[in-house]
Image (cartoon, rainbow, N blue to C red; front, side, top):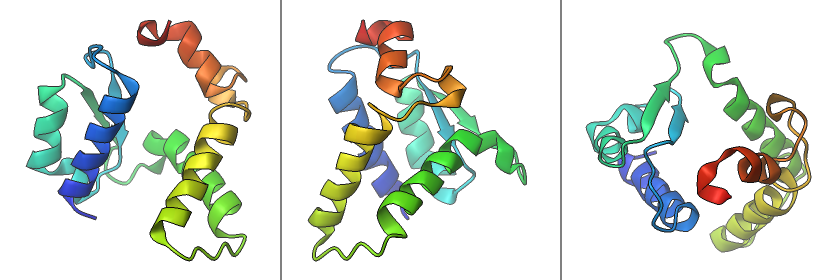
Length: 128
């Protein structure tokens, strides 16, 4: 994975989610991968005034929420022998899982057992 990939992903997320709002209240939870620690990615976070929260060396619990998400995604999408003919088919399937189930139906214990979209509507001033 390269810094270009994670910077492009950050750019996509900012353009789709913020729609002109400030990103200064955002927090990026990251592991210690070289792509996230890269000067390229760190510079983009700084330019957008996004606080970087990077896990401590050897402490997997710092990133527990994201690790839980990826475990759920792998169980749902990847472990069930999904055969994707194209990269686009895989992207569409994963997007659908995240947007229609994970963010809108699945209740999260770390959010007080509400779904992420409802939590965001309630507590994030950008989305009120």
